[in-house]
Amino acid sequence: MSDLIIAAYRSRNAAFVAGERLAALQQAAGTEPEDIVVVTSDATGRVSVNQSIDLASGAPLGGGRWGALIGMMFLDRRKPVEGGVGLASQFLAAGLDSSFLQEVPALLETGGAAVGMRVRLLGAQRVTEALQKQAGTPRILQTRIGAEAEEALYDLQAQIPDRAVQPDDLI
Image (cartoon, rainbow, N blue to C red; front, side, top):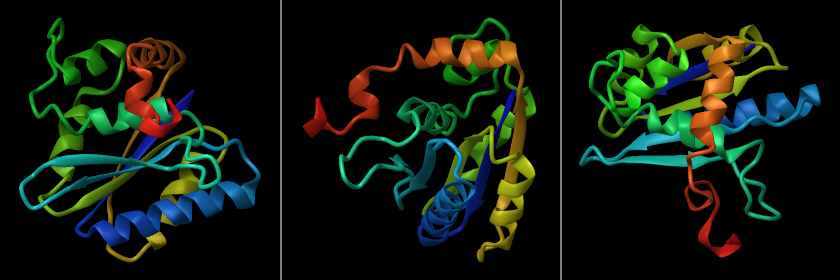
């Protein structure tokens, strides 16, 4: 079991600072790195996914596929429907909470940003406390992922091409 936690900020800078704070929390705790992703929306509403990377190698940290999966949650603004074909419906079929899936894309204001991560070993409470201490008054969403849902999400991740989660110069 794990948790997905997403915190939305009005400014990109606040979200990137929050991402750095979460990375420092992981390092201090000595836990296995989890992918931390910052999703941004520019003035035109274009969504970008910025994954945490190892500065030495340029490779994504802790499973870039989780970051890509979290980023994709911001792309489908349609209501998740049983048996539907959209991204939100695929996440619903995997076992994620319907209300969480509806709230995630609405978090991202034009020009704003959100930081998200899958949490296992750090504990969701430690992560949300660290985010709440962050300047910028984030709006925090959290959902629990059960064992079956986690397995279904791994199946979805297997469909993400390597090019989507690794910089071009590493392939």
